[in-house]
Structures are given as structure tokens and as C-alpha cells.
Image (tube, rainbow, N blue to C red; front, side):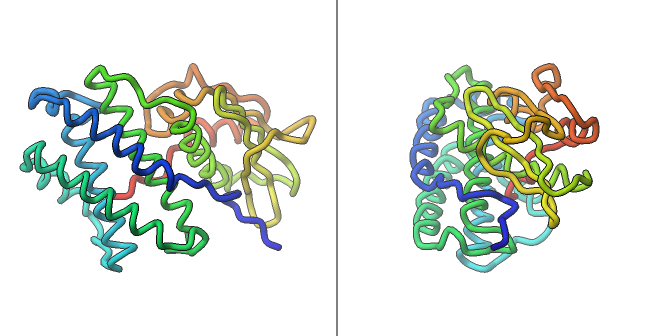
Length: 253
């Protein structure tokens, strides 16, 4: 049996509505000035627009078989900047309900563009959660940082590590240990077909490399924030470089 490079499925479907409700609760209390607040190199309005755009793209591609084409983000963000916060807010609420209904009726293991549905959903959830964190920080709201919301994001982000390690040649069975404080441990393994990853501690006494960080630093690193002082690596210099230059898969815009 072929081992999936992505590891076992991550089920975030039960979290979709709750993550969205938390976002709605924050956005509904904002003033016009709050929507214009700088946030992660953008504004709160622009981050909310990114969340909405990713949802609309997913509905168009998966439900309606209507790819938006290249350069969508370049057209979408300037256009949506002309929409009021109230209109943006209502579209966010409506699109999430449609997405939840879509995913409830799809086989989690079905491949869409060579990626299983469960992984697409986990990635979309992770980006929405990370953007929500950035919005919350910008408006001085407490982070949505409970383990039940955060750990699936860490798990999802680490599923991208095999891609980061793809240029590193290692004999089958060699391991890269990943330790994330307050989230758990994961192990990447070399196979004849490439690298795979799954939750669980490394079984090797001398892994090829060990990567250690905390959950907060990991998601910030994966979105391009500089947190190098909170990322520790031992072992293979090549694996360390791969980890330090690795980022999250592209946002779904």
C-alpha cells in the first residue's frame, strides 16, 4: 500500500462554523476606523477581503467548476476595497454557510487537482484562522488561541514540510523530528518516493535533523513573519535551511 505524503486526514469540518462565528463576533464590533487599521502589512478591511476572496474562489472552483483564472487576487483586492465594511461583512457570512454545505457533501478523500478534499479544507481553514489572528492583533482583541482551534493549523502547516524537504536526499527510513510546544510532535520520513509526514514522535535515536519551535512562532513563520530566534534546528544544515525558508502553501486566492 502506498503511503500518502500528506499523512492521515485532518478533520476541521466541525470547526468551520465556530471559527467563522468568532471572526464575525470581532468584525461586528468594529468601527469604520477599526476597519482601516494597519494589520500584517495590509489593513483589517484587506485581510477580511482576503478571507472572503479565498472562500469565493473555493466555491467557484470546487462547487461550480469555474476557475477564476490567473491574477484573481490582483483584480479582487482593488475591486473589493470599494465595498463598504457592511457589504464585505454580509458576504463573508453568506459564503461560509455555502462552503460548509459544500464540504459536508464531499468525500474527504476525493482528489481535487491531485489534492485530497480534507487537505484543501484544512489549508483553507488554516489561512482563515491565521488571517483572523492578524485581524485580532490589529484591533487589540484576544487571539483565538485555544488548542482545539490552533492545533489543527499546526498539523496542517507541518503537512507541507515534505515539499520543503524534497531536495534533500536521504536513504529511506531517515527521519526529521518536529517538536512544537503546546501542539505535539510530528515526524517526516524519507521513502523511495520522497518525504512523508505524520503526527508522532521520531523513533530514530539519531534523526537526520530536529526542528523545534512553538505553535505561535510556527504560524507566524509560515506567513512570512520573522521569528528566527524562536526556531531551533539541529542536525543536517540542509534540513535546517529548508525549514527556515519554508512557508505555508499559497493562500487560496
